[in-house]
Structures are given as C-alpha cells and as structure tokens.
Image (cartoon, rainbow, N blue to C red):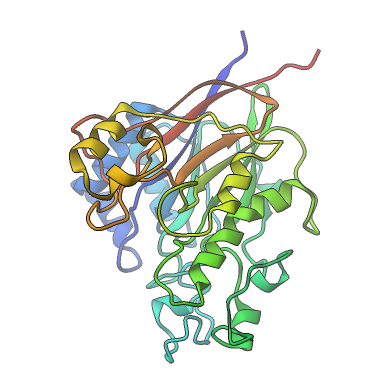
Length: 343
C-alpha cells in the first residue's frame, strides 16, 4: 500500500499587535489561544502544515518556539511576508503615509500575520519559488483599480504595489515517495475599500495567480510534479463579497482536484447561529470560518487544500468540533494524499 500524507492549512490568527509579542506568549506556556491552536494541530496531526496569520521574525525564533511546543515538526520554513513592509507611499488613498494599509500588505509592523510551514519531512529551501515581489501591474491581465480612468490611488502607488498581500510560495517537500510542491498563499480580504474595489480586485488576482502559474503564464515556469495549493483565499465560491470567477476557475482548473473537505460542526454552527447563514448558497458542510452572522458576512468556505489530479486523495476534512471553539475563527482544513506510483 502507498503511504498516506496529511497536508493541512490553518489560519491560526496568532498575529499580535507588536513585534516579539507572539514569542512572549508562546514562551509563557499559559496563553490560551496559543495552547488551543497547538491542541488542534496535535489532534489533527498533519504531516505538513501551512500556518496563516503567524508573525514573522528574521531569526524564525517564534516559529521555532511554536514548533518546539508541538514537538513533532523538525522542518520549518518562512520567508519575510509583504505584511507591514512600508512603501513610503499612500497606498490606500486616505491622504496619509505610514499607516497599516500603506505597506505592501496590511500590517502594524513588518512581518505581522505572515505565513509559515511546519513539516515532518525535509523542505527543499534551495528550490523554493517565491513570487511575493511580483508587481501587481506586471501580472498578466491584472484587474487594476481605476477611478475616472486613472490608477488608484496614484500612478506611483499602483506601480509600486506588489500582487501578494502576504506571499505566494512554491515550496518542495521531500517525502519518502517523492516530491510534492506546496503552493502556499494568503490572499487579502475583498473588503475594507471604496467604490474603486481595490481590495476586491487584488483578492481576485491573488487567487487567479495559481491558475496563471499552472498555465505557464508567468516568466517562471511552473514546478514539475505533483502539487498541493493551500492557504486562505479569503473567498467563498458563492457567498459573501468579492469577485467569484477567480476562485471558481481555480476549483475547476484541469490540473486541480477539489476533495471538498467537510465537517458536521460547521452545519450545526450555521443552523444554530442563523443570521445571514440562512441565505448562503455554499453547502455549510464545506464552511471553514466562523465569522459574525448578523448582519454579515457569516460562515464561509475560504480556506483550501487543493491537490493536483496526479495525487490520490485518501481522505479530507475540516476540524470543527460540534459545540467546541478553538483558538481561531478559522478551522484547520486537511487532505490525505497518496503518491500515484508510475508503472
């Protein structure tokens, strides 16, 4: 029998309001949220895990401390995210410079709410593809924000703006059966903007990035071999704000399969919480996040683990215990995959 590998994504919402605070909370051994997130990870026990909203520091000290707390992940990876990377420009059109929204990605400090990978298997850092510096205006067929035919908020700001709110990485993981390329990302929310729909359009293109990449539409060719796209798209294919064609296109991409991870806990939550959930179109079994239900946005499917079609799916799920709350509004999404042996 082929070995099965559990690959997961979890927006743990462990970001803090200042640098060093996450490390402090991890090392204290008493922070309820940190302990709750760690408990979820232990219960699901993924072999490879993408963490979203995990503060980055240059030495990887907080990530190492969290991995030591879990005591099961010798391989760790993180790159500096775009969050909090100041530009010196007014990026959101509010007439001010230096605010959290004036970075390449939203952040109160450099590295707030970054991404990190924990793995039981070696990660091939030498062959990582990092697209986090790709300028939005250089992205093929970019859906750029315009007001009265002019770039919003200014030609200078739009020319400097990177596509990734946090990052887009391709990280090879060396499994005993071969290599799987982890395609990790965290798209920004399609809200908190104005009629120019800057954030909505950026979210659309951040999600569409993977379809363009897989189709060979970038200067860098796509990595060969099996892959798993994973992360927080901040986009439900049917419900909530935003432009839906990018996420629908990714789910229907000819190289991608959607295992439709489900949970009973999400169904119970949608039924008991009511509000806008009653009018949602997405099957509530697929929900991955528990947001405010009145007046909106409600519970949605925004976190994804999407294997390539040359991987065999052996199982999938969302960790959402009935009547239980973990340390995040998001719930861990996992998929079990097997490498298809060539004859």
